[in-house]
Structure formats: C-alpha cells, structure tokens
Image 1 (spheres, each protein chain N blue to C red):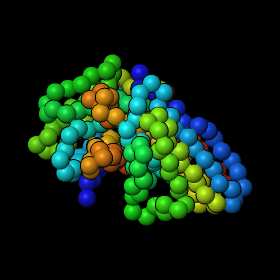
Image 2: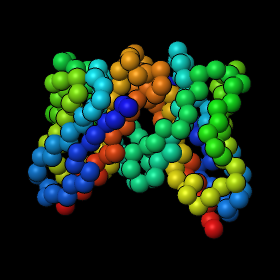
Image 3: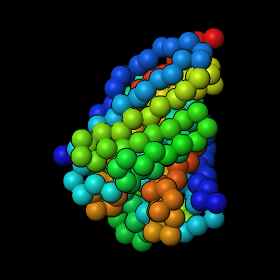
Image 4: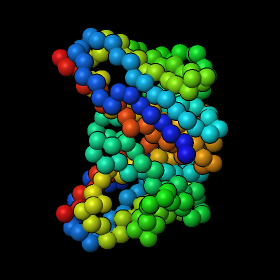
Length: 111
Length: 118
C-alpha cells in the first residue's frame, strides 16, 4: 500500500524563523511529489517535484526531492503569520493517479 | 487556467436529507474527477474516482449506495450524500484531472463543501 508520511505533525514558531517540513514516501511507480498549503478551504498547489536534487523556489518557499532516500523537504524562510496553515505532501499513485496524502503539518507562526 | 468550481460551499440540513454537491471544470475537460472527505484535523481521504461516462471506483470502506457519484459529462461530476446523518458531517472536496493539464498539476481542486447534518 502506498504511503506518505509527514513530520512534524505540528510546529509553532515566531515570525522571522525558518522552518523545514519533512515528507517521506513509499509509492509504487513513483512519478512526482506535490506540496500543498491548506487554510480554511481546499488545498492550494505549491510545488510539483519530479527530479532529484533540483530545488524549486517560489518567494520564501522552496522544496527539493531526494528520490534515493524517498524524501522531500519544504523550507519556508523569514516566516510570516500568513504562512500559518496546514502543509500537505502528496504523491500520485495507482492507475488513476489518485493522490495519496500525508497527514499534514500544522504550522503556526506567532507574531 | 484549469479552474474547478464546487457548489455549494456550505450546507446545513436535517438528518435524513439527501444532499447533492456539484463539481465543474470551467475551462478544461476533466476525464477524471476525484472526491475526497476531510474530517477536522485530519488529512484528505480519497472516497472515489470517477471517469466520464463510467461507474465510479470507490475506496475501501466507502458505501457506494450512500455516496452516489455521477460523472455524466467531461465538465461535471456530482456527489449525492443520501439520507445524510450527523456522522456524514465533513468537508468534501472534489478535484479534476486530464492528460492535457497533468504536467503542470496532476489535479485541480474545488474550494470544498462544508456539510453539517443536524
């Protein structure tokens, strides 16, 4: 059974801190790994990673994939209160490419 | 591009009512649509996968007679929660996919429907 595991489950930091969120996976026929940010509504897409070692960056957020270790990290630098959310990691699996989600990391950024 | 509209965003109704949720792909043809359920402080759990014109494939533990899914066209899928009970209260999210958009994002999500059964 395909599995995506995230850590930590929750994290509380102060504005300006840098955080690293972790995602490990066991997926048959791995194609890609995705990161999402979820606030009160449905997840918002952040990154799709397909190749090892190539960092994807968007503003203060960046992510990288290690296909040998079956692992990805999401970094957020100079955190702001608006970064408070649940960050979800997911991988397409199965013939229909349905997404298997991790449990998410609840990030709280205090002013 | 690749916008998915989900309606309604919020439903509050009495136990025993059937509730229909619509999911539309506005600017692309969705060959596959997915329905997820999310309980408070938990992650998204896939309920079913539907392909246009064929029967939905339900995940283990999801009652197909309780959660009726119809994907009659390439732009519309509906989820009907039949005879809803308080334990069906949850956040329901749809997503849509097609080979044409897959390389950018595998799935595009609707905004979700928060269902509360009294």
